[in-house]
Picture (cartoon, rainbow, N blue to C red):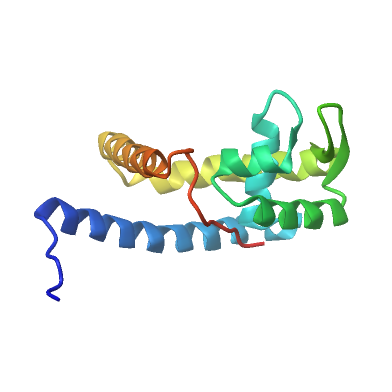
Length: 164
């Protein structure tokens, strides 16, 4: 059976996907380096960010959905964060077993420290780039993500995890 050939757009999309994987690895490394001494990793920082971004406390499953990760991956991270005193679980009046994840004072302090470091880091990274190119890249990545979400029917991928 002959191997199908990429269209020109398909070949470029494949290159973009591979480069995105490489970029993701570098971003995780850089994030880990940025917050290691605060007791965080990039993945833990992302969970704290999802908690901080929500106007109301959420269960792990909702945080996972918002982050585009599996519930199991976020549950593992939440358990680690709880063990380190950065989050706590609270009863959920809407569901007996799906407890709400709440950032503790220590978690809020770690998150605030991480974000204070992220701002100058992102500014330095963006300094050498054209703002219009950054905006175009963002639009393309958002469009690709939305196309993938539409293909699954429920807006979620079938399998995703996270590093601790």
